[in-house]
Length: 120
Length: 108
Image (cartoon, rainbow over all chains, first blue to last red):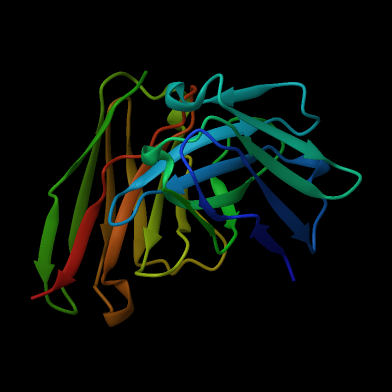
């Protein structure tokens, strides 16, 4: 069964750090771009970051540049999001998601259940 | 950065009705890199449409997508009870791969 499971969320004080993980099963992430998307309570979806299939390219939204780092360990079939200098406005459910096909420009076809990050 | 606008914000409809949701981009979305997602409360989003008009795996054929350039549409031919949800468009032609603000389809 193709599945993504996020972990690492929790309550953290402003200015502190947190690392999220996303473990994949039922497929190999090494051939897909992988994304993080977040959703603040009661709000819409916000795309956060993408790492290409081999980690050679990384893209992120301006609001997290210099603070968040997306990475991947294909040998562990796992995606990460290192979040530093956290702010109140980073409070959200964080979803990891898989690109539909090979390449960076893809819709997101598999999503995890999300992990909640509360900055307070 | 491309900005996506969705209209209307909310639609109140009855089962069996036809629905047309709009997504407009501030600049052309290259090569139809436009997707639609459905999200229900407490659940992760689900991919419905990719590449403007391609139906994702397992998506019923009552869902269809169309458009080009800056104007895109998601159509649900006949609303089923399980279709009442939030709908988001997303462009993935250039970073940041932004989402629109969403349209809520609720029961009249």
